[in-house]
Image (cartoon, rainbow, N blue to C red; front, side):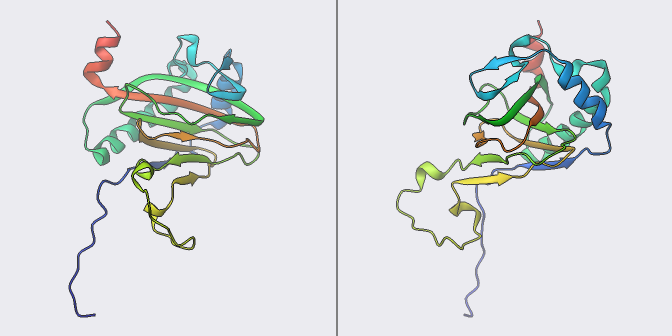
Length: 199
């Protein structure tokens, strides 16, 4: 073609996947299973300890997991371009086969994450909704295209020991569950915000 060009992928949505499979998944799964849970409107066909007022990552048996998540959170914060992000709250959820997680985002937070301990069977993927889809009004995309901005949803297939970190404003969900999903979720906020909540 002979014409010089420069391509810019502007306003990307940073999502990072970390492998924490070196941790003891048996202990982590046991803590999740033994933590009392109740129904919650976002989790259809499952239960969570989100409203219990107790952060599951404060469990002394999960100290290694919490430390690893904090290390990953520090790394991801650099990618996101923010400083001093700390864990504000954490909880676990169990969704049975046939259940699903409704589309939602995490208000009043900066970074959110989900951790998948050892899985004995495949589970439905985490589905992330494109934040620019509402602005794409007339594009007719080639269904065979691999360009990321042509997709209104992108999927992440969980693996044992996987930690997923993403901006809290990014809407996400699951479809009908094909396995028994066991997870730990958490939110991160600025250090000074966390101190204000703890007063």
